[in-house]
Length: 555
Image (cartoon, rainbow, N blue to C red; front, side, top):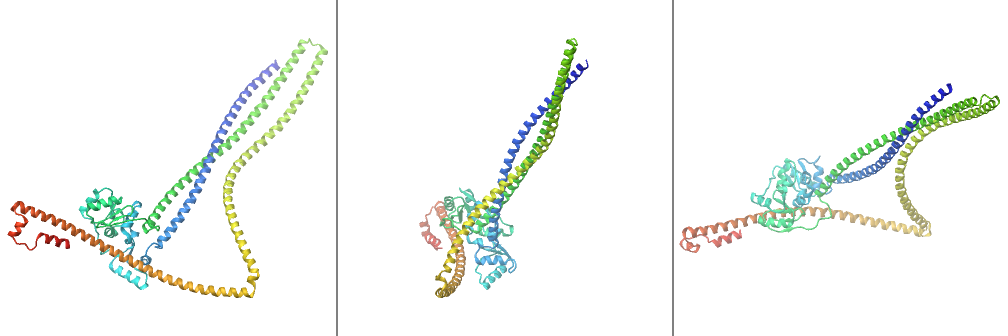
């Protein structure tokens, strides 16, 4: 009975351990599945991290390139590189040497990018006119240019400049015309202090889309004002047209617009770069989180695997105990059935004892093996944790090494190119050294030749220096001539514009008088039933109508 109770107890333990063993195996499979999913997710995040790293490096390079271009344009703008010589010196002297200087027209107006060419054409040389506070400030600036021989400039005193604007008739016709864009003075923005200046320069200029629209509108308003297209073509008062291709050099407004556009682009790219950095950091944090989770899963997996191994060992031990008890029970039954025959029982007992001793020896050996494997398992677990940590570290190091490798490849290519250049330079130097050590350059004849060449070179240098000074002087004179001519051309254009406006006014007045005369003749006929010829016979006039017409045409 005692053996039977022990056997039942061991079998119950076996069932309990088997349940725990199955639960551990299930948990082990779940951890394997989660580990695989986490590894796939980690690989995906690493790829995204690499992609965003490339984007960030590209963004950094482009931002630096754009900053360099902006700095270059800003330096040119601060140095007034695109202004006439006289205007440039006035603008540079406004901070300390002159007073009442507000700046050039190009500096105080803000022009939309799509209207830059039209406004540039409309203003022309007026872009470089200098705005001053009063006429006195203008006189002082002109005197400054004269005293130092710095060229010429045009000044716009704020206290005397008056605005100009279109008549209501022309304005209404323009606003209704096809292709109308805006009045030039309304298309730009500036501070209230310079509104009269802008109105004076652009108040009577109309902007339309195309040259055909400009021709149609000019015909409608009887060619009484200037019309500019978006492409920079002009229909002048009186009907003449100006147009053609663009110059290769950029103007002041174009440079100003390009600088403003680049600064806006830089702000946009910097904002995008910050977004890339935030996205990269989010991906990196997510990657670090999954790395930690992957490491924790690995530790849990090793722990559960150790449990499974422990359960396997426990099951093996219990099953051996179960077998041992069954064997003892069979021995007891055997002796009972054998009728307690002494010799047979002794033989059977000895066989069983021998078998028991073998089992005990085997059990002892297995226990030693279990201890050894347990120790190895613990060492393996610690080693596995270290290897997992090393693996993650190596992956990070690998990414760094790849980036460094790309950099080194680029550096290597540059060094190879430099080496090639140095080799070529060394070859040239060797040839020169060989030539220098030869008889051609070491004797007295060679020395005399060198002295002669030095003398000739000095004379050539003196001649070239003299020519250079002459050319510089001619260039200064030419620049002054150009500025003077530009100023005269601007004044002539203003005079022509005034004359054409006056001519159009006279033509309009003549048309009005013709209408009034026709109305008067009709009134004479309808009211008095007289013709002009009959009335001239009955009444004396100082001048006849034809003479008045000719007089009006002459005027």
